[in-house]
Image (tube, rainbow, N blue to C red; front, side, top):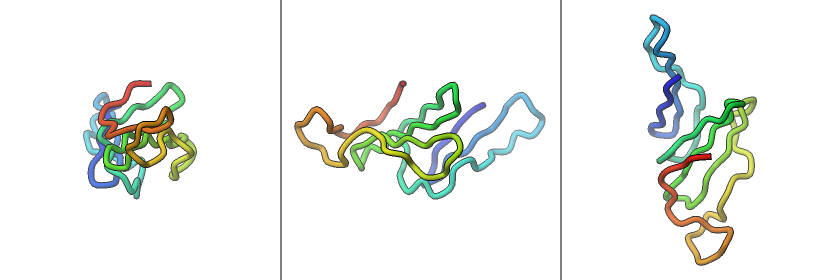
Length: 88
């Protein structure tokens, strides 16, 4: 599968099928995902650069679970500053 984030939505496409249309897998993410990662359980991780955090969306939910970062760019071990890429 290929994943794409744009304007508050995350879309998925399976290039192996004849249907090459993007399917909306997450609506109202409320964040721009500058980087996304899908783990082997199909959980989605979204690096929200301007909100200084990485959001975690369990595969069975449409709302984020607690992620990483405080939401503030500050010199603290629990803070992130403009995370743009992600690899889990």
